[in-house]
Every structure is written in C-alpha cells, then in structure tokens.
Length: 559
Image (cartoon, helix red, strand yellow):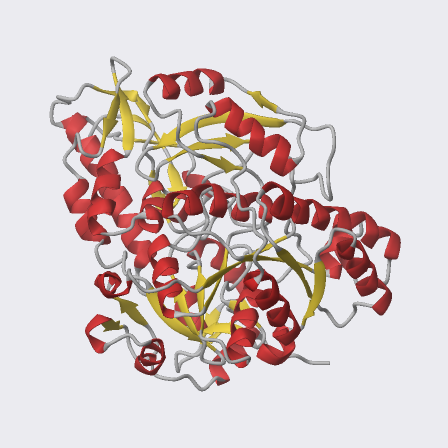
C-alpha cells in the first residue's frame, strides 16, 4: 500500500490564518507579530496580563530509548493535542524547534508525521522565524568579543589555554569540532586551539529557553563563564561587556512562535531541540504562556525519558516552578523488538520473545517516571501495520503489572480520532489527585552525588567513573561556588548506558564522565559522558541528498 509522505500531507493541508489561531486563544492583535500568513511571534509582554490566571494541566510526552525503528514521540505529542481538542478541551501544544543539522543529516523533518503534524512544516523545519540563527550570531558575537579583547591588550589576563567558550553553527559538521584559528600573523588575532558546537547545544540556547523575561536573559548572559584568567578565576560575558549587545540580538528570538497543527490546534514551537547534549526542552516562556491560555498543554522533551524527561524535571521544572500533571511514554512494537536484539530488516515479523526482552527498556522508563519522579504515567503504543494482537497484548500485560495502562495510538494514520483513547486516559490520570512529584536529587548534594543519583537511579548504572581531569574540574567548580547547580548530563540517546551499542536495559555498567564544565548563565553544570560529541557529524547518506525544490518553489524529500 502506498502512503503519502509527510511533506505531501502537509502541502495539501488547508491552514487557517495565524490570526484566527491566536484569536481562538484569546490573544489580541497587540501581541501578534506576523511572519507571513501562518506563523507569528507572540510578544512576551502578554505575560503581564496572564500571570494571575489559573494554569491548565501540563502533559509531558517522553519515550523509550530511541531506535532506528522509530517511536513517534513528536507525532504522538501532536496527535494527542489534536485528540484533546477533538474531545472539546482547549488545548495548546508546546514543542521544540527543529535544528537544521539533523534535518539535513540524520532524520529529515522534525514536525511530527502523517496526519499528526505541525504546519507549515517546510518553514518549521528550515529557517522558521530565525531563532536559531539569532542564537548562532549571539554565541559568535561573544567569541568575537573575547578574542578581540585578547588581541587588544588582554586587560583581563585571559589564559588562551583555558578558553571554554566555543563558536557554533547550526549544521552537523565534524570537521569543525577541533580547529586552530588566529593564524597568519599578528593582524589576524592570537593563534589558539578552538572548536565549534552545534548551535542548539550552545549555552545561549539554554539561556533563551530558561529565561523568564528579557531582563533575566540579560542577567543570565552576563553570568556566562567564557574562560579563566591566569589566576584560575572565571571570566564572564559581563567582564567583556557583551551582555547588552547579546540581549539585543536575542530580543526577538525570545518571543515564542505560534503555528498550528493539521487540525488547527495551536502550537508554540520555541527552543531547545537536543536533550542528549543540551537541556532539550521547549522554552519556559512558551510553556508558561501556553499554560495560561489552554486547559491542557501537551509538551515534549528530547529523546528517551532518561535524557529529556530527566532534564525537563530536574532542570526546567526546578527553575520555573512548573510540574507535569501526567506523563506519556511513547513506545512502538518495532522499537521494543529492536531493543530485544532484532535487526531492523526483521522487525515486521512477530517475535514475542524478543519483544518481551525489549519491553524491559520501556518498564525502566516507566519506573523512572512513576517511582523516582512520582508522576502518573500512560504508555502510548504507536501502532504500525505489522503489529500483531499477540505483541500488543504482551505490552499491555507488562504495563498492567506496573499499574500503568498501555493505550494504542494511531494518530499517524488517523489524526485526532486515532488518539481519542489515549487522550481520555491522559485526562483521567491528569485530573487524579494522587501525585507525589519529586526530583531525582537534592541541589544541596555534591556534584558527584548528583551525577551518581542520575547514573544509578535513572540509568541503572553501578556508579560513575571520572576520566582525565573530570575530578579536578568538579573540585574547581565547587570551590568557585557552582556546586549547588543542577546537572545537565550529556550522554548518548541510544542507550541507558554511555555506550550506544548496549540496547535494552544494560547491567553491570558504569558511566564514564570525561569533562565537567559550568554553564553559569543557563544555571547548570554540564557533565559529558562516553564518546558523546557536542558537534554531531553527518551520516554516510545524509538526508540532504534527498531534499530538492522545483521551479515553482515546491520542496520535496523533507521527510
């Protein structure tokens, strides 16, 4: 059977003007900044009139450990939002912005799929409203100001061997991970080792996502540690007098972006794609505004619950004061069989033993959400045509033993109608009174204790080992007064361990922490584990090879 591609479905959609979507939410024209007919930014000053309103219920969508077989987390998020709207609830969706690197690299688009998409998907997956370009420019302005300070006399005595601020680019480009710049004589700067991160892993992106207003953003930018001087003291953006100019560059990017789904549910898409190497959540501002405008807000966090959901709760919720009322954990039969050791080519065949082995990965995420974080959960089984009744029953039975319901989700093929049962279960648990929300660790713990709590509790490791200078880095950060910050773990998304080849639920492993640095502006400490890179590379066959545009401007191959 032939299926329409995601982009074909999106291009055939009849969109409402964005002013109609805004009007449905009660947003006046005074706060709408149109980017064409179907996109708009919402002025953050709208918060002044919303802050005293009651907040809606917050639904967090997360997933099992991702696989090449597909889980459908964003698709489920969009479809669930549409299903809640279909049932008569005023619903708002809050998503992360796609990053151009993965779009042209490993996965095509990032706006949902099938009949559960946000639109206009081509715009969203490409330059959108320019937020990530603003992040890139702001980040690189800091780098330019810092190197210029060194060139112009270095009054701050910056030790060029201890510069921690990298340049960035919103493209997967491994060639830029490690570079030497400033070559060609005195006029061209001071030669030094440098490198690039992907823009969405930049601390600037985290600052954008976690700032409550423009003044808070400026303060956070000023606090960013960019280097150390010859005495070992931190040098900040405020020291090089860059916070004002950076805030100017980010002024419009701070405003949440409003679009719609195929079924016209409002969607805020703003910030934070990467939860494997960054904090990976929709912006605090977009989520909080959405909570004041809707009865239900459906948001997602990046990758599996060990990464996105953990950071959503331990970082975003801690800083913003919000908390989920229910959690949806997305899985698929195909993905679970992959975790059970089945090759991608054989996932269409029924295999109960492999499925049961793979289900352990799902149950680990369920336990993390319900036991460690104390939140009610439902498992959304993203249905594929090859799934058998026996396989679906096996998942349902295993979840029932954990007192969690597994519900079929068919939003990819049916849109809202395919998510009605999931939406009903979400409403039931969200409206329930029994919630024992808590964090995975206490901020008063030492850095090592917090890392260990995540490694042993969330990942299931036996503990953490510290490679190279990691222990010395931790000691230095604690001595500088950064010890009470939360932890942002940079870890592969493909395994609960730091080894992407260890599928399912690995045992008898330890997490190797090889680099620890402070993101003082964002307000957390980054612990880099295993072989994870903050600048991804392109795969052997990049998605870019299949993307094209015809003479009329019609795009093809974008997922």
